[in-house]
Amino acid sequence: MSRKFNFCAGPAALPEAVLQRAQQEMLDWQGKGLSVMEMSHRSQEFVSIAEQAEADLRELMQIPANYKVLFMQGGASSQFAMLPMNLGGKGGTANYIYTGIWGKKAIAEGQRFLPTHLAASSEGNGLTAVPRQQDLLISQDACYLHYTSNETIGGLEFDYIPEASVPLVCDMSSDILSAPVDVSRFGVIYAGAQKNIGPAGLTLVIVREDLLDQAQEGLPTMFSYKTFAENSSMYNTPPTFAWYLSGLVFDWLKNDIGGLDKMAEINRRKASKLYSAIDSNDFYANPIQPQNRSIMNVPFTLADSSLDKLFLQEAEAAGFLNLAGHRSVGGMRASIYNAVPEEAVDALIEFMNAFAKNRG
Image (tube, rainbow, N blue to C red):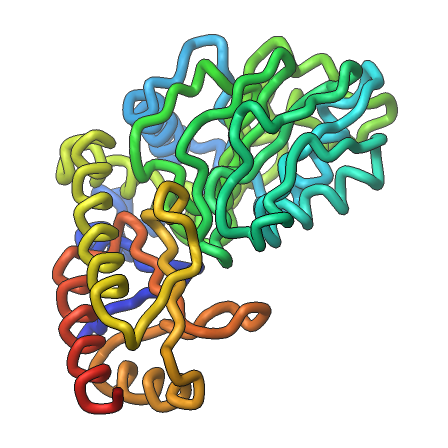
């Protein structure tokens, strides 16, 4: 078996140590004679897995005691609708900061359930820089302010946490666990698992307890944060194997990597190397303003776009997978999440330099 370097934006690379451990435990989890996939979610065995995963996540992110951690389904896209459902019960306007495609999708869903207000937008600069704090115009009747901390497709990342007098809501799908974050500054944090948490099929929601009674009337049971909070995310059968694997990732971050400070150091180093390679070679370009360049998703273009197909073909032949940019923007994109090793970035840079020399 020969594993290649996977730069997919999601479902993304998982730590090899996590995959090896899951492989070892696949048929017989800790001598119990069955796989985690075959366990009852209410069994003592799986409850212990779930509780350890949450405890490790709380330790990693230093989540305060007055926050609930929910393990849900439906992806971040479901949260676009669940947020106004769960936070808009007292009336008011949902406020949004628009910085890219995923923020736009969140706004479109929010409009189905609440009046919405655009507090700020990056459209004027071509989605190449985030609005500054002084540019935010939050409506007086705001019930929350939503933003996307890292736009996966555009490679645009906030370099600050917005200040607001209303609950701050953040889609952290593509940069959660990449660096420490002050959870106490948020009302709700949510993230699809398939980038930095674990496999697809699980969605993480971290919600401040006082917001659990803000839901709209007549909310379906399974759309309610309160339902999940009161039932330890087990009102129905949760995605048990995805939860288990996410727990292994949390353990890897805590014990193998040494925590989020160390992970952030590695991630900054990986991103710095790749951006330096792009900036130092006229054959490549990145459109994002330096202060808002994502450390997780690095889009880049070739000076001659007619070479795009050849670049991707030669890259895959050399062992670099999933470097094509999103279909909506084209070009290339290297997603260098936590589980992408530094050696993968080093090897990609070497390939890019050789390609530019041979084809430029």
